[in-house]
Length: 494
Image (cartoon, rainbow, N blue to C red):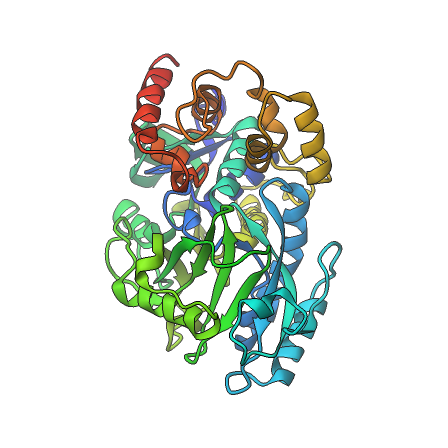
């Protein structure tokens, strides 16, 4: 049986199918460990699909002297771009200058650090621009004369989680979605867990439950910890596309926060995020009226064309499970991560993950194994995840591969071919072709849905339309019902 040893004991039981849990599963499986992962809902159903979709160093974190985090994130930005070029790509950001908020010298100094804290291989350096010649000048109000540009990367966040889980599974890990941890206790040097999939045993346990990390410790394991999660809600709105062009904006607000405006899903603009303390049920997270107004006002402060809540076509919100560093304001809470290892004669290794961000998830996983393996009596060995392509990312140049893909599958429309390569990279070759079955809506074929059910743990239309993709913004009415009906048949047939 994969995921367990001959004695029926896994090396590692991971609780949580967000980006950190999936990344740890991938790294561990690639080092030869037997791995079981349990996720109470779908992969990336919560925080990991509710981000601003950026792989970035975190320019604003420099104001809080988070130099280690920013440097690590900048290094990871280049690595992730290299191993997942289908779901990650460069994006230019325009920062209009507001003298009364941050002086030009401060911004220049911050951008200089951003350019030089880590070596850049592919992304351009920052520069000052005049809006008399830059395309952003046609979008911004005439009072904004100058600004700056710099580069970061876009990521399909929930797909990054799924690709990590796929790679882990292909290396022997067992990924159990819709499978809740009921309890776990140490006995005889082994963790004995009760789950919806039945009893599991493991030599070490990783608590990567995100907003539920404290609940797992207290209610599922019966433990107390001095570390705590500070839950911060971040909300985003989506409008019809506000401007032409591929550049994004980073807008400074009078309260010291920043808001991004990013081209999204071809026809839309993504605007976010907020930072609001949250102490309710993480299963029920929604944007508030106040947050919507805040984001609309931030854009209207800068853009020639104002937006109102009536322009919002979709919104989403997520809870960031940040490590509680007792910062006075939500915006100042550290985005760095803390790995808390407990291990003594009475307790086999238990690693709890506090905080973190999508950009540093691969490095977090590497650090997690560096802590866990010695506690398990195993050699750490060489790291490997920074150079091994994620599933579908085994090509160097996106446009070159897309041209090759279109030549091989001429029956596909240019738009569909591009979407498939952006989503699946070379894995699209496994189901693309002339006989892809019925169109379930918006270009999603039966062949694609079957692939997602078989290889990516998709069980419902929501899984496909809002996490494996954001096609829910595009598909016609009735698509979800047809897709659910097809998936129920496909899953029943095995």
